[in-house]
Length: 300
Ligand SMILES: [Zn+2]
Image (tube, rainbow, N blue to C red; front, side, top):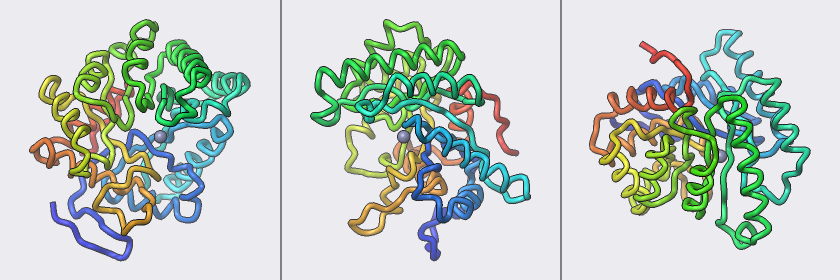
């Protein structure tokens, strides 16, 4: 696939239907041009996208974003269809309260959600590594796994520097990804961990990081999982506004990632795995549906 530069930056020439399984498109950084970005994402192939929860206080913002884009669709503008996955992110554990868990339980009752997320364990910083933090993270993680089981929904996992602990907790918990589906979002573990999550029934979420040839551990892990389990174990995500693909970064400054960049993630993954983009896109669509236990038809 070749690329042309336009005034909005890079845009792919050939577009295959894609599902963005992880976005924060409700983030305020998109308030100024969300509709424009949504139409451009649609043009680049993105047909469905998920808004992922992290703070209870933003659940309403997710709903408003979903409504904003549904209104556009109703008025005839082609934009991706938006779905919700609500949850309490482990990296913000110090701020979550019991009332937030209560609010999440309520939100899952009252609004259609396709998954519970993002939830998990994160021991990336010193603050998150403390015993107190880890204990609370585990408690909130388990409570949210219970909610997923109660609603028979897949979970979207956020795991940083805690893959073994997360695996152990999942194994002893009655959440069963082989039955309910689920995604290890923005997967960052090693080869063995990648295979272990896939074996448990999870798909691995691949971001723009895959386009970074210096991300050797990640690229090895994804390749190893595919060698063992086939292309069925992967899904795509932008994780926008984070994880901007290398080709879309401008200079030293952090460039805001957008859903319309998902095609570059597809391209980077196809190059890494030496498969053609078209068949990979079709496989990834199917994988996303399987991970989320939905039956979205492949656009013909
Ligand atoms: Zn996220």
